[in-house]
Length: 179
Image 1 (cartoon, rainbow, N blue to C red):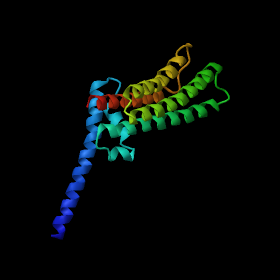
Image 2 (tube, rainbow, N blue to C red):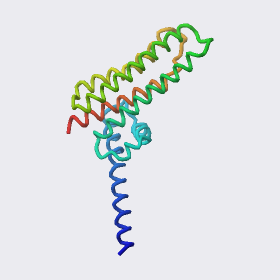
Image 3 (cartoon, helix red, strand yellow):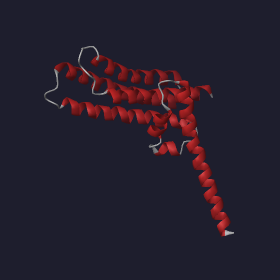
Image 4 (cartoon, one colour):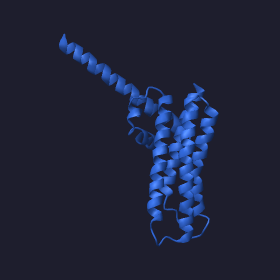
């Protein structure tokens, strides 16, 4: 009887873990199918590192995970920019671009926080607007480096990852809205 009880507990635990993992996989799959800017593997690997993703039971739970991941990423990019700016031999145009990017990512963090609060209050329009504003940081940062011939952005990968994280957040919000 004791072994049967233990077997049942293990079975239900595995079932719950499997269902939760399916929420992340299914949500990322749906997001990737609906938006060419979202890569399924990137979506899953970026979000599964957050313990809250493992306990998510719905796409609404994943919205917070995606936004938190994007906020953490914006902070990380800010640190990368600070390190790049400490290089004394940095060309002035690149320095100006990086200073602008630093401000853009600082604002993006604020936008993401406002977007998360709006989502929690079920104000999906404001949430979309705030997260879209954050998303613009990646494009604006990347594009300004292209304005001067011969200048290459040192943040191309970071900008691309941040753009995708915000796209995932928006896709998940849209999924919640449709339900």
